[in-house]
Image (tube, rainbow, N blue to C red; front, side, top):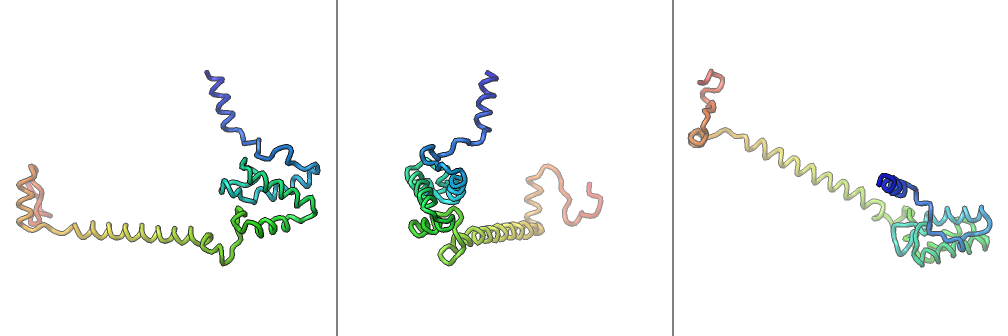
Length: 166
């Protein structure tokens, strides 16, 4: 039983060594393959959306990996391969899109909503604090009598505060 648990733990903690890149996709030149892998890590799988094409098993990711390798074999630079894919699929194909007018909402949206959330939390906190201090008003004599009647223990009244109350 312990050996099974140890085996499962090892499997869970092992890094994912098996990537989606198939052996038949790999280039013969190790330097070219390394370039292809680096480019693929920065490209989004359009099916999986939050995975690079290097990690995705989707058929489209396979096609994009093959396309990257074909472009590299044709003599394109890394930047030219990326430009080709952006021209074909748009900035969405990049896992880290550039900061420009069409992606301002993507870059500025999260900090904006974080600030709005912080402002809302601050307003709620201030309102609760104001309610707590405004509810600390003194009791009227009628309210004090009703409270004394309900409470089994005698509480010091406003008149006896500061004096030694029995």
